[in-house]
Figure 1 (tube, rainbow, N blue to C red):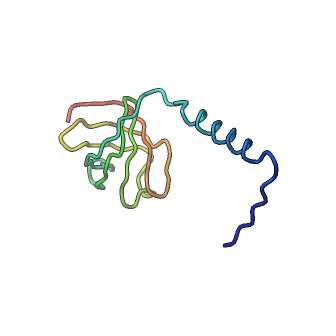
Figure 2 (cartoon, rainbow, N blue to C red):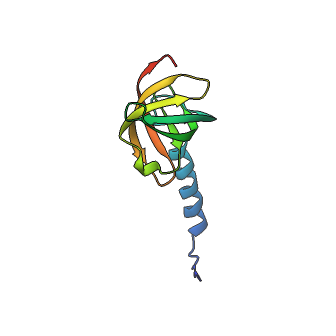
Figure 3 (cartoon, rainbow, N blue to C red):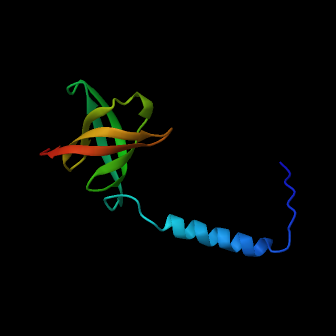
Length: 111
């Protein structure tokens, strides 16, 4: 695709202000809990343990986690998240994208 750009006087000043604005907006953290980037294996367990899907935890916080799993759209709205060599959480889905799902922790209990 060809793109034609016409530079007008003052364009570079506008571009610099726009970039500065983007950086300042991106620096603001809107989450309640700080995220920690992790790569840990886990299991999505549903239907009282009769259904399970392997997953990878991409990041985690005190309030939730972001997961990657095959067939992410087939995951139920609430399920049990079992972290390998870690705790088990009851979770609810907050958002879904084509390759990741965000969940919030409802309750933590012993593995």
